[in-house]
Amino acid sequence: MERNNQSPVFVAVIDDEADLAYLFREALNQIDGVEVFAFTDPSLALEHFQANHQNYRVVISDYRMPTMTGMELLSKIKDVNPAITRIMMSAFEIQDELFQECMCVDKFLQKPVLMTDLINEVRMLVSKIQILGTNRIS
Image (cartoon, rainbow, N blue to C red; front, side, top):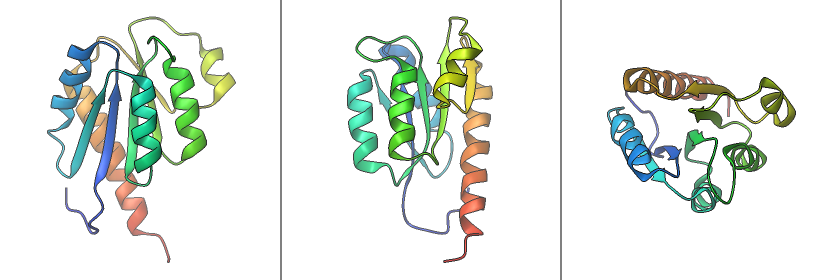
């Protein structure tokens, strides 16, 4: 993926299961021009996002985590920068009403997710966002 500007494109993966967070990070690192961060603590992920929100394009969060649910995290991320694409992942079935209440989830992926599907989804989102960004009038 060719980039016209110098600012990095960040993607975050938040899952309290460290092996999954790092597995997803390694898979997404295959996308050119993207720097992927893996977090097992949603509070640390939020802190990093707040400090670097201008570089983020996609945030992927597990639903069930200690201290903060994925829904709470994505809602706070939306408050900081509503332009970020927010993806919820879960092995559990989640009621649609939850998504409609907070309006903080752009896409839902059911675990187990195929790595190729995850990579293709994030690659498409990052490409689409970069293309939209090149069409802006300053």
